[in-house]
Image (cartoon, rainbow, N blue to C red):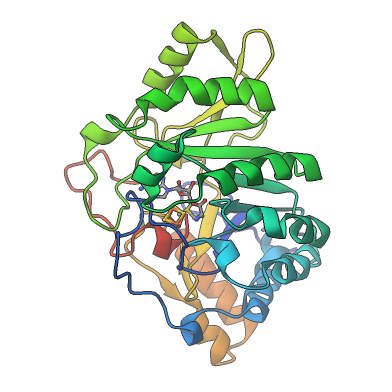
Length: 331
Ligand code: SAM
Ligand code: SF4
């Protein structure tokens, strides 16, 4: 049995996030520029076969959890085919997707039939006007429809990711809490991270998890923490005290979860990244396309994991934002 992917801080990496495209059909201000985005050329993207090959190489190292992301993963044609290929790789136990939900409803059954079960749908506002303010596009109704369809088809869990932004989405906190209670969908509030294309992030815009928790508890109903099932999960989960409705928090800025991180990533153009915030990458595509032995690819993955920092530096004056914004890394 090969050694698992353990870094110098003892963190075991079993969780791979695969970005399938940097393209997107909306323009969330905290991720993409409003216009004139320079997208990757098609030939630069890893093919589904290359992604599958990589997963077959790393699965024996203990990688058993995958998440498909982007850009918006569902703007790339054939994602159900990719899911089917990945679900068939021995050792892969769990495949999820993170999507903005615009195209999810129309592909949901095919994705489910391909073996996908976990879905996170991103929605920052339960209001079409505010949705447009954040995303600079229309599509609110489609996203809400996708959430309901995901539940109806039987995806489990269905979670909603909401980036919380001060002076913009405070008024969405209580409606989201109520939505969680009414639908059984877990709402996960994510703190705004400095990974936006416009470099406009400011600490003052981060709506902290603790404030959201306080507001929900005071104005809706007290929340009680749920026992942690998976210590490497980024979200801390709560339930309303009457047992109806769950809310999670991803406090990446105020309480980074780096010490339990088990993730690494490949970008759509085939670079291995050991962290969202990493300033370095390893060129996997070049290795795959030049036909190097699998052992060389394994060595490169191990080197990348070994080089992983203890944590991100968002809270330090020395923080350097990566050249790639979120949509290009794969969130
Ligand atoms: N397009 C898909 C979506 O939006 O769900 C998948 C990719 S997106 C980059 C993945 C997640 O990252 C989304 O939930 C999005 O809200 C979140 N995200 C993007 N930029 C962010 C930022 N600067 N800070 C915090 N979360 C961010
Ligand atoms: Fe697109 Fe997702 Fe980025 Fe929004 S967060 S612009 S949906 S990739």
